[in-house]
Length: 419
Image (cartoon, rainbow, N blue to C red; front, side, top):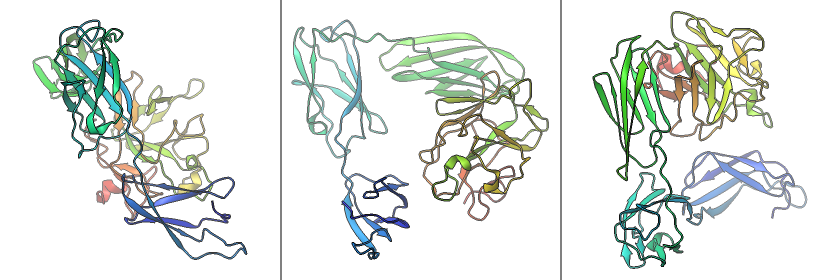
């Protein structure tokens, strides 16, 4: 417990150096350090606090260093699914157990899973958080078994073959989307335990997982499609129908400011924005378009019968009610669309940044921003490098140090490239 924290001017985490922000509790007797990058489990760090402490006489103390170790939280199973060939674990046939863990499994620990004395096959996802356990041997009815994970998890799970019921598999292609663009068609599927995914449009085919694109199609043409999905358990499902290619709006998510540099105690929403850019040669009516930030959907609409027109080769920024044009020196009559909410659309997180999708009035994806590989200090926006490229070819970088954020004008990285 600290005597009292008068103020905190700066904070650094070193060994290795990590930038971060420091916060005080309401009672001013606790300090919270929030690094802007991930700390590694088991690593030692030194926390340097400057001008933070005063002694009982009110005199400032010298800079101090405090050593601490980031301890790994206990590993636990977040959820599990069981896929059975019949109504219970005692039925013959392969049994699949799908586990999700609270953190990645240790690569140094041997991965051995067993039901009593029966060893099971295992398959680990790339992020090492999901584990598929396959058991070929039959289990006895009305018997309690311990599922042991060896060294990775100390406590076993208990299963009873008399009470464990199978989970019914839903339609594999219940959540699939097919969208026609000017010269290509995109297919997305969200299939649990997906093994194989294929799509045929006209006489062209594509194979892969989750997202497929079939190129070089004729504009304004209707095609027959056939989509097939197969999961890890051999279940298959096929969908057929027709899809048309048609021109889409020439609008892109061009810049995102989620971490503005503002005075202390000023809300980020004062400087947050999402910039749209019409790179085409004709104006675009944005009325009825939506912006999605993670799961939140925000329509671009005006009360009454007004239209939102974005002229050719022009920019518009979407902001919340709190946005202040003075932060970036913008005129009051700038091309700004203000949402009726305090923020742009939900939570523009600094890190990890949210997924942002722009859809037209029919629900088609027009532009998408997914994420950035690392965090950046305050005052840098995320800019699109190639606004004229078709959807699926987006490339984003942080704004340049020598140019800064560029609301309502051409991106600095478009002129000089990414740093």
